[in-house]
Every structure is written in structure tokens, then in C-alpha cells.
Image (cartoon, rainbow, N blue to C red):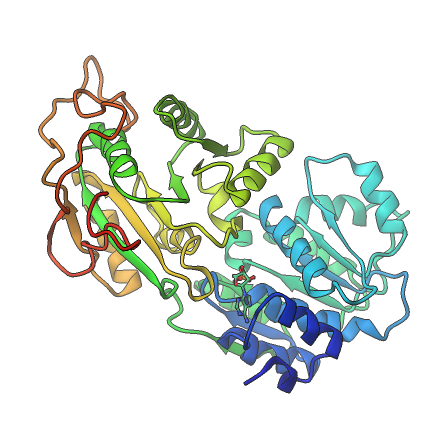
Length: 424
Ligand code: AMP
């Protein structure tokens, strides 16, 4: 079905064509008619399914012929990075219209935001805390807001934003339509939806907790103290044009970024110890391809929408299975292919088992014949997989050999999907 059959304004159909979206994704085909009809909506859609355009297109449509100079739609998202991407989406999808959007996020000076809000941008994309700051300031008015979107609603609740969200909703006196998007549907979201939404349309794409299509996943069993070595080995011997590496703590992120930079890789860092300016710079550089590797903590797993991420590598196994789904949703976006590797130590096998039950699939275990798994832990104390490697970490890619040996299931031999099987 072409976009124009959805009843969208021709200026939006033109923008969609410019962006080379040939047809609506399933979540767009499901959500757009319901939103255009004025319904509340609860959408459960996997990451990377095109859900941003699913709410932005009908919102823009509804605003095109309305009087200007007043904010009439607000999108709330849990992280700055995600908010930036949504606002970027407003600009791209609204490029042929006169509609204006603005970004209201924490960590930036408040006065310029206030001045901007007083000009009445049509759409405000915000993180909850900073939006509330502005709502508590009587110089800025939100009384014409008719539509509210809660994006990544499950994450917002994870991050403790529920009280803020309730306050925001209470302050929007003339709200007519609320749209919730969530990658997963834990009971707390279902309850929230029931409390807040009025007879919502429901769109559910795929399994509620499934991973995005197009992603090939593999688990690499490895002792904790060799995780960094194995990662470096993979990076040197596999063609990985754009890699997102997840670690548990910002301390580890910093350490790892340093090690990989020393190896000669172009590396960006994204974690909460970075200033907003550093985070924006890291994201932009990664998006442009100036950095091959982004080392990130979970903060980043929600917000990153970079088309070309080819590999997501988790250096630890998240305790919460949904976290894994979010992480790997950063690759394989919009039907593209991507590889997701997870490095798993023996004591993380149980957590991996929980993930496998959640995604309904057992990950193939991959061991690399050319990698020495018997190296001892460094003295005095084992670290969290971020020690300098011993013996196996020679820079310069001198460890090339045959394809990885795989045990327990298909898929692991897609070590490289760029025409060369196995390490290159
Ligand atoms: P999202 O799930 O909103 O983060 O979107 C993931 C990616 O899909 C973004 O890079 C979008 O630009 C892209 N996208 C959205 N809608 C479509 C579509 N109909 N066809 C192709 N790509 C799309």
C-alpha cells in the first residue's frame, strides 16, 4: 500500500518520498489511520520498526491547516538522544510544510528554550523533567496542546518518570489525544495505558518482546577476564564498519574506549559522565562515520538511531531481558541487516537463559578456534573483562585464520556478512 492511500497531506507524502520510504511499515499502516481518526493509541512495536514516523506523520497532518503560533503537540521521550532524533524526524517529515518544532531537553540553558517556547512552536519534543520545569513557569503556555505522545513508555517507567508523566498530563487541560509507544508491554505499562488512555486503538506488531527482524545473533562464551581480549580480536578480524559496544558501567566504558583508541580504532563514548555537548558530538561523529566504534552504557541503548550500525556487541549480559532487546534494536533498523554478539561468562549463563526464553530463541554459541581461551586471569585481582589482554592482543591484525567454530545452532557462521565468510 502506498503512503498516499493513508490519507496523508500531499506535502507529507512528498517528504516521505524524498526520504525514500517506499511504503508504510506495519506499525505505520496500523497506527496512522487510528491517529488520523482522533483515537488514543497503545502501540507495541519493536525498535526500528518506523514508529517515530507512525506518530509524527499523522500529527503533522493534523497541524498543517491549523492556526500557527501555538504549541499543539508534545512528544515526551526518556533520553536526550532519542528526543533529538524525534525532533530531527519532525524537521525531515515536515520539510515541505511551514510547521516548526523545538527540542526541550535537560542539560541545556533554560532561557533560550523559554524564549523559543513563547514563540509557540507547533510541536515540542521534550524529556520529562525539563518539560515540567517549563510547565511550572507561567510565562510559557501549553493550554492549546491537543496531542501528547509518550515514546518508549516502558523505558520512561523504568527510569522512574511516572510521577513526572502524571504531572505533565494533569497540566495539559485541553488534551484530546494521547498516544503511547512501547517496545515491550510489561504489566505496569498495560495498567498505565488503562488508566490514562481513553478507549485506545491497539497496534501490536510482532511478538511483544521479540527482537527486530534482520538481526543475526550469537553468544560468545568467554571467561570474564578475557572479554576485552576477545572483543579486540573480533574487531580486528571481522569486518565491522560501524559497531556499538555496550558495557555495564561508565567507568568500564571509559577504560574500554581508551584501550580501543590505543589499538588505533576511532572510538566515541556515550555515558552519563559525558556532558551534553560531548554526547551530541559523539552521536554526530558516529552517525557520520567519523567513529567506527561507539562504546556506550545502557543510557544509549534507547536513543540511538543510526542507520548503518552493523554490529551491536554486549560485553555483559543484561539482567533484564528487555534491555537486551533494546540494545540489539540499535542494529537491523527498518529491515536492514545487523549482527548482535553477546559475550557471556559462565556466571552470566542464567541471565542469558532468561533472555533466550524472552525472545523465544536459543542463541548459537560461537567459539573461535584461533582465540586462546586458556590465558590466566591477570594478577592481582580479576577485572570486569577490561584488562589489557595478555599475549593475544597484538595490534595490527596478525591473528587471521579460518572461520569461527560454532556449536549449538545455526547462524554463528555469519561472522561476516560482507561477502567474506569468517574473519577477514
Ligand atoms: P524508528 O523505529 O522510528 O526509530 O525508525 C527506524 C528507522 O526506520 C529510521 O531510520 C527511519 O528513518 C526508518 N523508516 C521509518 N519509516 C520507514 C519506511 N516506511 N520505510 C523505510 N524506512 C523507514
